[in-house]
Length: 468
Image 1 (cartoon, rainbow, N blue to C red):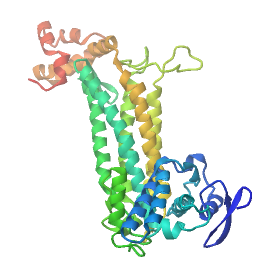
Image 2: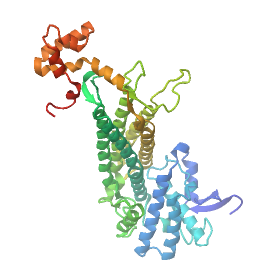
Image 3: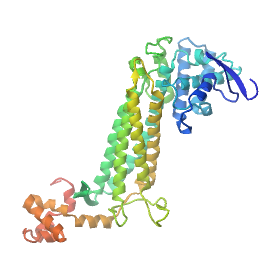
């Protein structure tokens, strides 16, 4: 070690690395050779945590199988736990756009854990002894099976641990709103035109049902994500690993995460295709479509306040315009729909990358993982924000709802069972043509009496099947 640098060696020779860091020669080479991107494209907590989980589990498994001495396993496990818990996040500087197998990130983890483990054992950084990045930390592993396992661990923890609870919370908020507004009858709309009545509770309940369906889709993608490629090594054959390693490592990963991870049933598919990631991304796209619909409905219902529909009142969170005083905009809905658009684009990248497996390896792993995790994180934040700052504060604008409902020509539909479609159509057409009320038009030449109209045209009875 000289000055602020120390020399580290890999199979290609000697490299100077910053003395204050734990990473080694291969990470330093990657910093120089893969510059594309910026801060946004650095691996975040979910990936670094997953690397720590995997290396800790591997050390425990190799010790159990007699391939790693107890003392070596202990210091590796201690260092890996520091990675898992976030103490060494600054030691993972690499960008997403690197080799397609994620080798540089795997070696980043191997080097950081080896150097930290050696330090814990009383040796110096860069010594590669008693713990070696490849021979000890990466024992029985290949980047080709460790990085796909990291992909699945990170995806499960981000989706199941963060996104799903956020969506459930929004769903629950909507269910409460649906219950509170179940008796408010309002104008229905189809084709952006007036339609027969619905209740506000039915409208909001429909939003909640969409989220339930999206949650079901997401939950259906989790079982394949529990399957780990770890144990397949380079091409799926398991060369250079113990036959019991995959099961032992998966058991330790399950213990560390509380998730039912297990070895993939076919390592060749696990290395060369990432259909589980593709399906998970598609489920997030479907969720985004539901959120887009909900947010746009809120925007339309809240439009105005005087020149639009104006049937919903939204929270006034911040000034809506730098030039128009007093303006309030549906900013939370707009932010949520922008996130949905981003997720659509991310999913397109993941879907295309998923088609690019050649022979025994898909070499688009990092970009697939980055886009899936970005989608999950964006949705988590945007859904939580929409729930807190918009959905929980939605209120009906009762006078406007009543005005629109009473003026609706489509209430004429209630007359159809009594006077037929053609006569009912003439009443609606006359009311619209002469700008009179539906009741006034019905009491004219079509021969409907006032008593009949009042008995037959009851908006609250039009929100459910007859006799209910």
